Image (cartoon, rainbow, N blue to C red; front, side, top):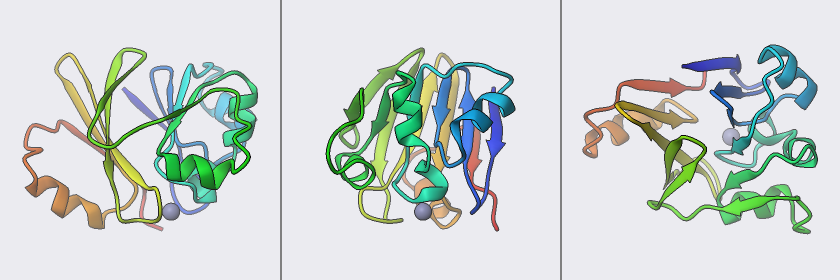
Length: 152
Ligand SMILES: [Zn+2]
């Protein structure tokens, strides 16, 4: 079950069990809005502030960050994040109890969208609506839930 902590141009953060998707609001707010659940991993779609503002703070708390090489370079050019994992597109990664596959998005340099799978659950996480049509045409017919940033 996905919990929307914040959605829109002022900040995005979603909690899928203990996976934090995006960290575009301050980390203390993520904890508070998430009912004090400590995330164990953080997946970021791209480097814009409304999606990645608190990456350094999240990493400081020992939470591993997953993103593209381009996104990590933008957020942290000096490579100082404690635990950062570069994801390659179209390669499945096991992140906690989810299999997460990144796909290149045209939103900006380094942007990904993600498909997350566990048992019979399948989620697609997109930044913006205009990706949807194209994505749905590309054989992703069994997607059960869509998580899309609220239009603002
Ligand atoms: Zn953006």
